[in-house]
Length: 36
Image (cartoon, rainbow, N blue to C red; front, side, top):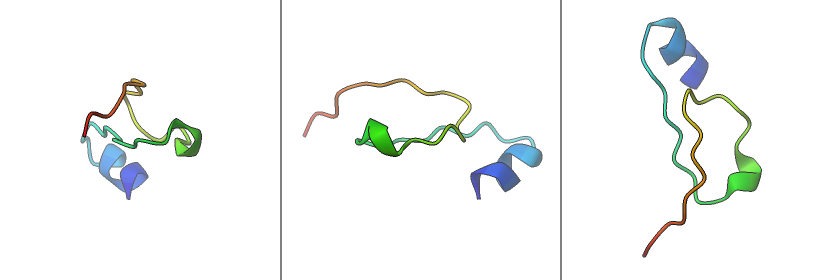
């Protein structure tokens, strides 16, 4: 889905609390703590 959106011109930002699962599909990758 991310790849299809990027091809349509959208900027994709993935938000994931587990940095080990990020594959590199997002345009912006910023490791940051998630506050509950």
